[in-house]
Image: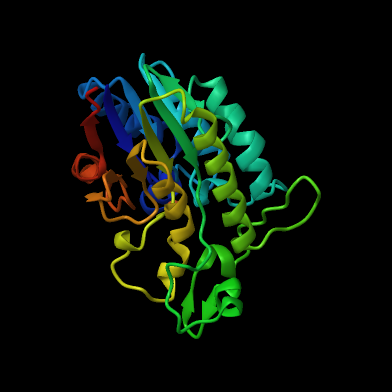
Length: 284
Ligand SMILES: [Fe+2]
């Protein structure tokens, strides 16, 4: 089974930096679509961060919806920034699921997928500061600010994860919930498959973090990694969030970080996609 993975295309940044309208974005995405097609994959996985705007997310899926292979999606943190009265939880649980479904993408956070004895599980992941530096306190991380340092989605309160009971969850609580959902998915399929591919937007291992500082606290959680390591059938991990592409092998897991990244100039799109996109085959 040939898998193609990409993340972090950040359409809103491309628009802002280049002053683009929807039509230009469609033309850009059509080139991305042709590039994806050229790999001739069996499965295409997008591992989060299309845009903070639902409008862009819809355009992204509409351009890719007719591709004839399996297509899966896990959102990134930017995809669930609050927007027009919608909170992050509503976007994660309902809105993004519906847009995916309407456009022939499987929304992995809702339920896992099995194709030919290969299982796919997925979650946005989240951050609980366990990958950050000990120099800063939970309170400072919760504020998203230390001196001049700011993690803007928290500092600007762009994430409001209000669950069904109306409770607003802290980052640690969001992360815990994502860990539980991921573990549930793994338990659901582990006896029905030979191999599991885990797709998580954020980083689940310390080995994927270059420097521990204020910002690394927001890259992911080592507790997500503990869940992955518990099940030996998980042989592949796809992630994004941090914009340095990477291939790494750890404890029998092949890790692919596949970000497109913040594109400054539209003419460089091909260089960015070839740097980020990851293509591998699972041979049984
Ligand atoms: Fe991200």
